[in-house]
Amino acid sequence: MGTVTLGVSLAVPEPFGSFLQREREGFGDPAARGIPTHITLLPPTEADAATLPDVERHLAAVAAASRPFALRLSGTDTFRPLSPVVFVKVVEGAADCAALQERVRAASGPCARELQFPYHPHVTVAHGIDEAAMDRAQAELAEFSAGWTVGGFALYEKGDDEVWRLEREFPFGAGGGTVTVPRQATEAELPRSSAPSHR
Image (cartoon, rainbow, N blue to C red; front, side, top):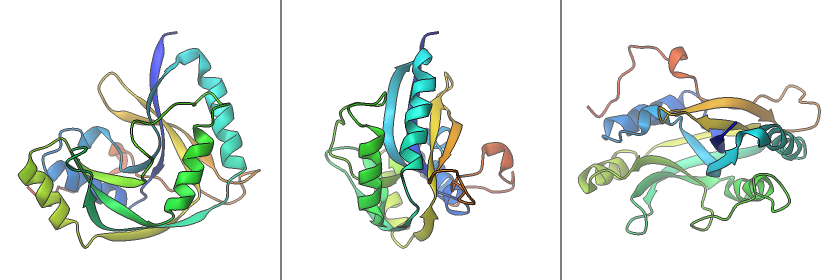
């Protein structure tokens, strides 16, 4: 069956998700169109396609044992010079994100893996573009803020076209209840009149 590239993340819901994705595209980041705005729980990870049922069972169990939490974004920062990334900061809910990603990556589970850098929840708004554009992203989104209740996470798969697509959502809490998973609209759901504001 071959291998697949998987990721697990918290989607930044509307209207914030599409807004930040358009901003990222407007700063000249070529990856923007293929990456829904998110907070990473499991970075891009290659897996045997045959293990997908095990991965989904593991993620369902992690979600069932989790509870909703408040998350708030505010302001910008950068990982430069260590890594060419500008991001929006997680100022509330960071500890919850850290605990959740540890359970997703548990050594006993099918998503076990080491991280290249210590975990730091964030929302990337520019990656690997020229320094002037990175500076602009950091300055122009410095006043951005958003908040919502995280009710679950989602599994994504990266296609051969470099686009990340939603595979399955995992609501928190056993039995699901009325909790919904905050998510970003798909490209097909977005109004075509919307344009990046930094063109």
